[in-house]
Image 1: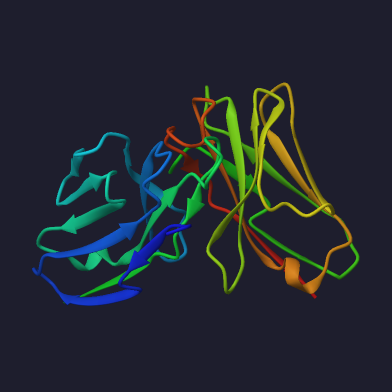
Image 2 (image 1 turned 60 degrees about the vertical axis):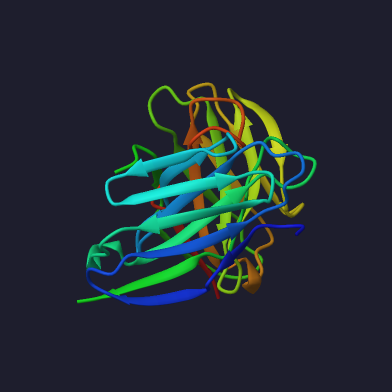
Length: 113
Length: 115
């Protein structure tokens, strides 16, 4: 993997369902992995910055895990609510740079009431 | 509200023109980042400044330039505008020097339309 890849591209779930999506990144020269939430007509909002292998972070019903050895991070949402509908982006420094972020194309989540 | 402000919110101009986008970072943040979000592309990093100095450069065109002033606000100058420059331009700020490990706080964006 040369860049950040996110899957699935989009996801529709029912209110109350739990869901998760994946961010894959190059496992060599790891610095950090960022998760952002981007609601329509708003600006990206930082959720987590993860730096250590095995890291697990939580914010309310949203949590994330990190595996730097295999190059993936999972974002989980427990008991999805309509207000969770947004695009979830992960970002990672590109190869050879520790000062900038390359963003994935995101997972667009729609929570149906 | 992230604390990052951007002006103007919308900008409509013609090809060949020059525009300036302005960003004020969160109070106390020394780093400013500029990103471009085009229709078919994800967020693309353009450039980072830290305390007035350029720190990192991404896919920024030669027609584009930026600077950060002593009061830490930043301006992104786009010249000889083309239709393809139409995009949402975000500014973000952080308290550290590393784009890789610092949380970045995004402003509301400036939507540029080139006709």
